[in-house]
Image (cartoon, rainbow, N blue to C red; front, side):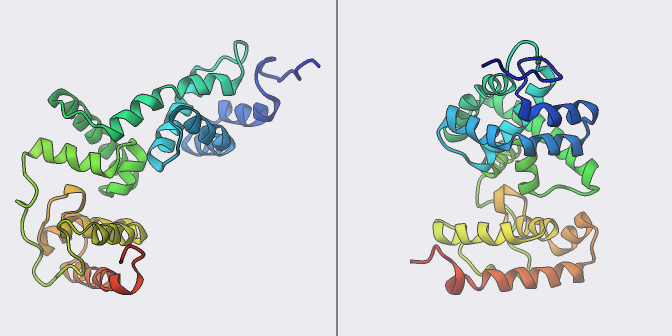
Length: 249
């Protein structure tokens, strides 16, 4: 049975004909989001094929590779899925970097340069500094990797940052208490971007610098009173660890 011919050539799968046509005519953030949604099953299958599992970081990187692949795709030469799966070969290297980071100064310098570029891109788009979650989603770096890059660049060892802002006592332990750290991360993920920045700079999460209420208010463009009110709400969430945390034994 002969393969159905697409308007972009005989090799482009018919189910991707319209999405590809729309994307070619509208390569904006909105257009990118639309075709990535259409290709989501292909993306997830590609991650599983090359890495064996999916996680947000690898899927984020796969989406970046998908957009790169779309720009180089020639419908007269191959099927779109085949072309994209070839692009996803790079996920194996990315996964190795995420799971077995190699602490090489040159690599840290390169990653730091990329991190600064991604940070500036998001800051320009958002009109404010991005949160670590937003930065991780945009860059493909894990939050742990972002923290490592910052620490390596500043040379500040763990435990040497400023003490916590007076008046804000964490509701959880921050040492080797893995369950409490996971609860912190769960609370963090539930916060809006502004509150995430407050929590990062109050507890030093993801190796962010711990700064005073006044400095935090200036950095975020809010009054010290507004920062204190938000901290109180965050503290109330942290204090419910024993009641709500799924990590407590």
